[in-house]
Length: 239
Image 1 (cartoon, one colour):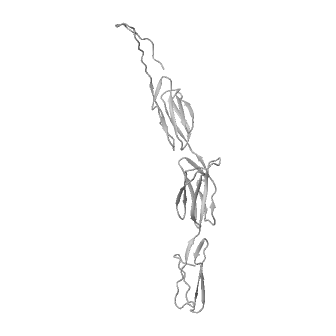
Image 2 (cartoon, one colour):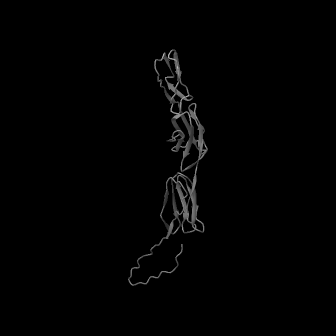
Image 3 (cartoon, helix red, strand yellow):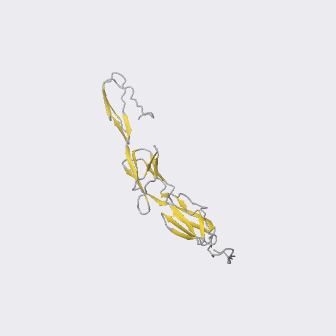
């Protein structure tokens, strides 16, 4: 066998005769496959070029309903490290993967949890499709305070929902990760600051998304037609 650097040697061969040197190794091809030397007059050097076989390695990231998950980063680690992104069908592909070695496939996303978290393949002997990896979209909470009870919160965007604040004035929505949402607060006699909150590609819990209530004020005015008239306002303010 060759040493760790790929060298071989046959010593003390008679100068007469014909010799065939052939090379072989699992998962490799060689050029040439063998060489013949007849009646060597001197020491001879016969070199070969070896190439490790490579194969296609692919697979799919899918939702529990079987739909592919696009635009997810997938990393192949092992003898070499590469990264690709799933296509519209949720497929990832690694071309020309070395036959030998341990290959680990790992998807990564701030919006999904995956099962299994990774797949390990110990060597390849043909083009290989790995088992499906199932992704479940993570869920996060958007929460905050309105400062008033019975405030209506409207969630819109990639999902629609409403929430009415309780006695503490707080609100909370459970939403899917990676999507876009807006929230508007409303209550009779009040406006809120900010008027609207916008969330894009949400990737974690969002707390303290508060709305500050501002009591609306109005003006009562008119014309009596005479100057110097005393006008009295009676009553009480309420909301």
